[in-house]
Length: 71
Image (cartoon, rainbow, N blue to C red; front, side, top):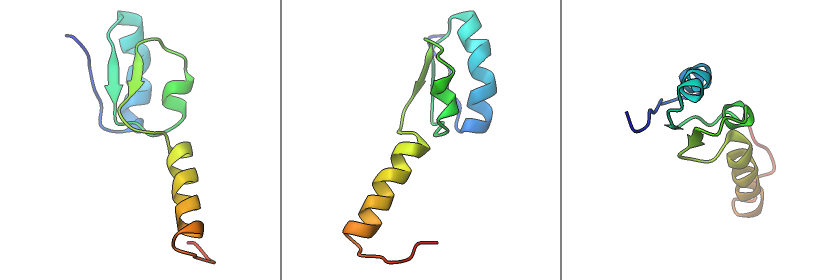
C-alpha cells in the first residue's frame, strides 16, 4: 500500500493513528482542523481545513456579496 485515503474527518481522524503507527501515508478529504493537528508525519489533507474555508467564505460574503446577515 503506497497510501490510504478516507473521505471525511469522521473516518480519517480515528484511522490516522493506525496509519501513522504503520508508517503508511494517509491523504484524506478531511476538513476538521483536528485531523492534522495531531502532528502525525504521515497525515496529509487534499483540501483546506474548515478554519481556512470559513475565513475565506466569510470574507467573500461580506466583501463581494455585501451581505449584512449570514445564517
